[in-house]
Structure formats: structure tokens, C-alpha cells
Length: 165
Image 1 (cartoon, rainbow, N blue to C red):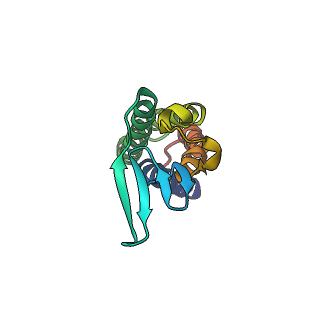
Image 2 (cartoon, helix red, strand yellow):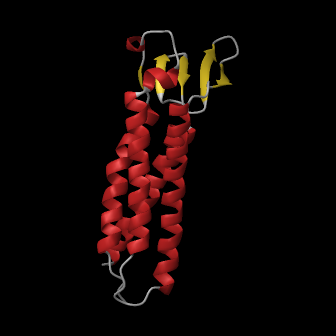
């Protein structure tokens, strides 16, 4: 049982870190090696100074939805972890971690919705006159998608996890 508890805790922390990285880091869409777009900025690599020059993205409803859902996912997962730690000390023996699992499930569904919106509305979100065939999804987008099943699996594990002595 201790191994399951350690596994669930490590899984939760890994997915939380992955969510945070995918929300904050700048690689949701890659146009070229020197031009990338994320949820917050459009960035160009300046070869002369070897720095990234970033400007705020043009706001639209779809982008704001993705931003809000990814931030909500991080918040739900963070709350879930804090509640889990609190329940470890306050929950009676034999109790289930329902609230923790529910928060983690909500984190999974909000990340899923954000990824779906970005997938289907990337033309509107990127607001570019360029052809989308010249770019591809970045590693943060892939990281966000990979968080979805991990969040949902950990949510189900929390619901079935019982507190023992």
C-alpha cells in the first residue's frame, strides 16, 4: 500500500510539473526553428544577439479560452495535491480520497478541453495569414495532451485509494 501511495504522489507531482511547463513554456506552435508561438507570446530568435524576442499574442476568444482552461487545470491539480496532503493527516482510517480524485479529474478535463480547442481552432488562435502547413505543433502542446490521460488515471486512482494505518 505504501508503494501505491508513493506512486500516486509521484505521478501527481510529475503531471503537475508537466502541466505547469506546458502552460508557461513557449512552444505550442513552431513555424520555423527561429519562430514559435505559445499561449502568451509570439517569439522570434535573433541570431545577432542570440536571444528570443517575444511580443504578446493577439487576443481572441479561442486563445483566451485555451489560456483560461490551462490555468484552471494547473489550479485544480495544485488544489488536488494540497487537499491530498491534508487528507493524509485528517482523513479517518478507511476513508476515500474523493475530493482529491474529483479535483484531479477536473484538471484532466480542463486540459483536455484546452487541447481540443487549440487543435480544432488553431487557425483562429494563431491569427496568421500564413499557411499552417509551414508549421507544426510544439512540444508544449504534446506535453499538454500527454497530461490528459495521466491526470484522469491519477484521479481514478485517488478515488479508489483508501487510507490505511
